[in-house]
Length: 468
Image (cartoon, rainbow, N blue to C red; front, side, top):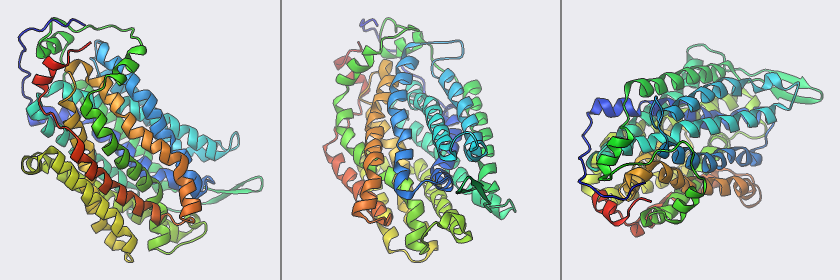
């Protein structure tokens, strides 16, 4: 890449509609994520997984993300196709994601060849790889196409669309059940072992999710634009941007060593945040069923267990709905509290929301707990990237967004390896304490924001940190 600095051309502002179309694919991605987050533990338990084993299955997602996202980011930075720079990855990931969404709830049909639990876990892994291939370039695309003064709004709109997808995806199984689609499970045996089918309302939700995923991605692929390498060079004030289909993986490690200081400071914030989120996703389903509904034993096979699970999934829909609305308010809140202050306030709200679950006796009160979680979730999906994007040169957005994912995946991997042991031996199987711990960690993440340097001046940074 040339280091010759020329007069920089101003990046044009985009309309709200253009930003929505550019980010629309994320609605489909989060629709799929919501189905996965809300139902994977339930599906795997139906296939025979114990509650303390669940983190080991969930650890696949962050492990895959840690490997896949930097590679995809690196390639999408330095390649260009007729379809564009980031779009080919959206499309390929969407195709495999849709297939995985269709196959996961049908894993039991293949149990005559392999244990249903193994098949389900394998499909979850494929799903995670595919989600990450589609998702990683979207963060870079927003930063690629928007000037700095529009990035808070851009990530906020992206978070709004994420929230919309998550709300519908989370609520869909319950909606279908109310429309008359069966939520019953049926017993079947393989040898001496008893398994249970996945209810039709969950199966059809996954089928609909696959269709929504593909349609949303296609909207972004065909209706949005990407700047060419020549245009990107002009925005950076450089003579050219090198585009090579063949890249060296050693450059990923070089960029990792030279990551911006702001990224390192955000690392601790992200560690506490995503360790907490992993606990919330894995254990809240069981915590709601056992702590609030008072169920015990193998409750997934009972009508009461289905009611408790639907209440849990609906509560997750609440936090995603709150996140969607709050996302649109983030630019305004940031004007008053600053970007760090906005994120800190939101994380504390999320922490209080999770802590409050311990005191709930009436399931209807979950709605109020999830309001705080929704504020945190909206900010988590937007503000760290807004803060980070100001410290990264344009030509490195893909790779550094991918490397930043390390600070998301590593805490989840650690939680996946040890979270189940903590629940089993320290919390004595009471998952509600894992949820309480998650609330405390979100508050710790807010405190760590004090030490983050929010540069917010990419023009100055480009002169100080010359792209390699």
